[in-house]
Length: 175
Image 1 (tube, one colour):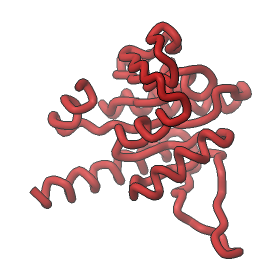
Image 2: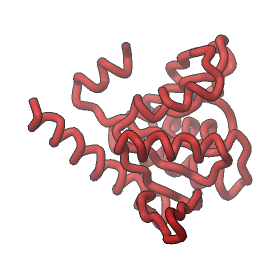
Image 3: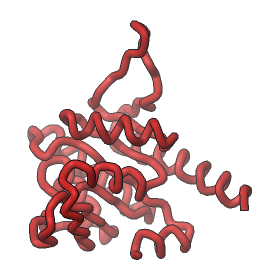
Image 4: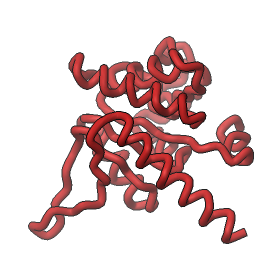
């Protein structure tokens, strides 16, 4: 319901995806992404657990941003401490679809196979994916440039806002 309310208010929701474990460098990058998202007034949605998710939420929370964690289990208390709105699904990895579907754009930071599944879901749904030190894709032996590469956190969020705003405008024009 909160996601629908933000959507109706024409707010941008950005999914931040990445591994539940990460090194200090990746955590710092994710935290900066979270700060930038909050500064832009966008809502951050993620899987709500540790690693990249916790770091991004910490960054957004430090700037007073809204954070939503879509959790794999049934316990809202499993969310990291910087998730303001935990959504317990009981869906396990299937919740990855909800994380992506709840956003207009995805920022992928590093990540493992769960992150790769979220990237695939986003691309299948034609939701733009911005990449920071994440997966690269090949199709039929050639590089697939579906993931929009970013140089740093500020560049990633600027590209995310641009693509999300474009999607919102197209959606509005369709009405």
